[in-house]
Image 1 (cartoon, one colour):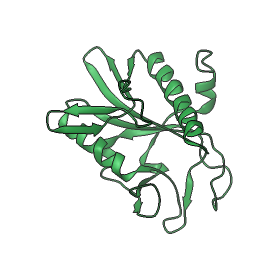
Image 2: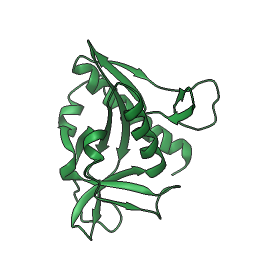
Image 3: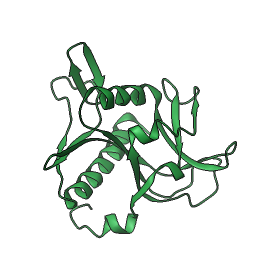
Image 4: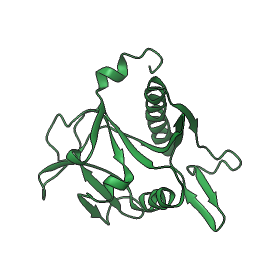
Length: 177
C-alpha cells in the first residue's frame, strides 16, 4: 500500500471515530499541522521541542481528551501468548506517553478493526472499535518487537482494550458512511 493509500485508509478511521465521539456529545478538533505538508502527522509544539500529537482533540463540558485513531484490517495472532494483538509504532507511542504526562488531558488509543485476517493468523479476528486510556495500556503491554515499523512496535492484547462499538453500531450512523 502506498503512503497515499495508507493515509486515506487511516483518515477514514479518523472520520468514523470523530462521528462516534460526536454522537456521544463531544466536540472534535482534528489536530493537523497544515503549515508544512511533508507527509508527517500532527505535532504538538512544546516549549522545549515538538512531540508527535494524537490525531484528534475531543471535549465535552469540562472533559477533554486526546484521541489517536488507528484503522486496521485485522488483529494479529501472537503465537507466543496465544492472543489477538494490535499495536502502534514505538516512537509514536513514546511521544503519546509524553503528551499524556505533560498535558492535563488523557490520551486514548482507539483502534477500528475490520475483522479480516492478518498474515499467518487464524481467520475472523475481532472486529469493531476498541480502545483504552494510554495510562491503562502502559501497564499491560503484551509485547514489543524491534523488527516492525521504523522504530519497532508495541502491542496490546484484545483483552486489554475495551470494545467501544461494534461495526454494526458504527454503520447505523448515516453520517459515517
